[in-house]
Length: 276
Ligand SMILES: NC(=O)c1ccc[n+]([C@@H]2O[C@H](COP(=O)([O-])OP(=O)(O)OC[C@H]3O[C@@H](n4cnc5c(N)ncnc54)[C@H](O)[C@@H]3O)[C@@H](O)[C@H]2O)c1
Image (cartoon, rainbow, N blue to C red):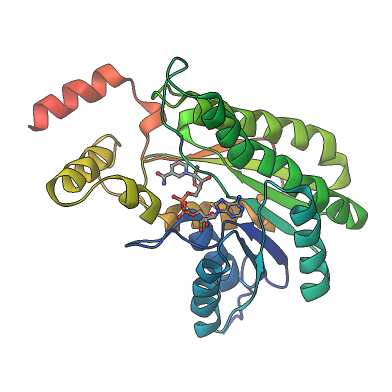
């Protein structure tokens, strides 16, 4: 029998936001961390709420994987520097960084407050800047690394979330810029644009009962497949982009969205009318 190694066997990964908002289902950071561990990586689980990351560690260790928890606020430069140092201390290096932390922010350009704007850009964009700032030199020193930035389809489709969309668009711009700047150092940088996936964070803001059921049905039906997406779907994509199987892929954005970005709203509206 051929012994198969995991896709990221022996590599060291940092996943930011590796906990999950309490509730049913799984967040994209938790999904990414668990899949990377299943595929052979040692994972530093970074979260503002260490108890949430502890739950991820328990899940990984119960499956025989390796992980450590690091409590940090990734909008803080000092915390990001300490986070990278913690990965090096615990596991010897950093091969993979999944910049997953992010938070939705509702409101148009007229009704979003300055505070909401600053908060959204801090959590969704500054976090990617600071985490990468300290991880890239470690990767550059060894001539290899892979960064996966979690953006959103909101980066390229309007949905009334001006600050969130701007920040997630910024993540795509940073992905291209970092891929250019660090390609010759052996570092690949890619983004994932999740669509209307159903995570505990979404469930926590979508009310309950019939209202939540309706919201979930709409989210599912907006995609070409008509099925729900989860944090696992993002985790599987992140593990692929992080792995050497993606060794010639850099600077791209992979939508994980049931085809939402590939269809015109007009055709989707016609389709939905036909199936009602
Ligand atoms: N859920 C969706 O439909 C969807 C769609 C597109 C993109 N995304 C993106 O996926 C990512 C994760 O979303 P999720 O729904 O899994 O969220 P989640 O709330 O389940 O997980 C995010 C984790 O990040 C942690 N966190 C928040 N701020 C932090 C900070 N400053 N420092 C460290 N940790 C922090 C939280 O404690 C939480 O455990 C985000 O970037 C989000 O924008 C989600």
